[in-house]
Length: 119
Image (cartoon, rainbow, N blue to C red; front, top):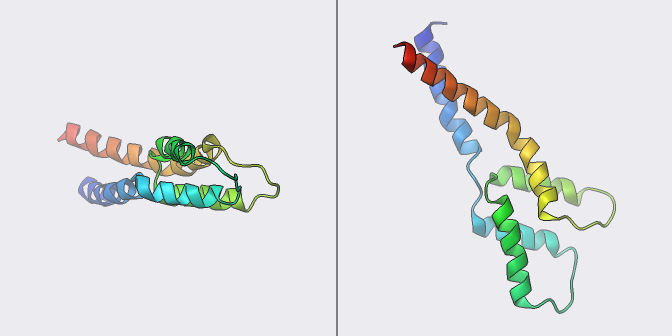
């Protein structure tokens, strides 16, 4: 494979990885977390507290892509036991899911930048 061919391949994967790692929409996170927490009914919780709680989740999860959040929530729901998830539990499960694609994206960008420096 020539350098030019390799660079073309690398350049096609960068946009795909960027799209794959695009953070989820805040409204989507709100709905997903509300559905997750609905499994743990809290009677008479004031609306302001519900909004503040969801805000914490959105703040913490807003750097992760939708697919990673969905997978982390699905994994949590499939766990035995009745412990409620904290935002950090889901964020941690998202972190390891995006680690490899994020590393691949950084390496591909580094390859492109190194190639530009050679030209």
